Image 1: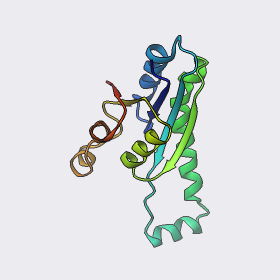
Image 2: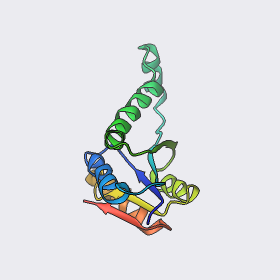
Image 3: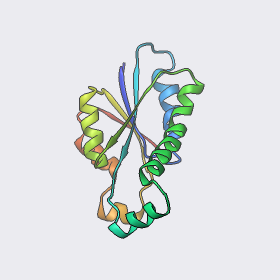
Length: 147
């Protein structure tokens, strides 16, 4: 069956359901499956006045982003931990679709499991496009979409 599963997550509420689907349907009785949980951090530079104000207040934006990533990944990893399923975590910087497709190629993923809707807003959909649709169009491996 599938040996290398890529699970890109944005931390949306469906993340836990996706993880549960992976555990129950794809790795429950299978040994040797590699699950990679991927979070892509899209860094948007602050305007210089915002950076200055944060620095003056002693706020480290990098540390805040790191804490946010940890919280997001804790939701995604909890199901795997609770079910004793081994997994790897990768955090990458970049544009989400391009980075997810690049990582899928790098790890020779033979299945990608994504959610039907993540944290996309209407404006994201209209101006950036739907990430799931773009992944389906660009992936070289099969994609399972969890609704």
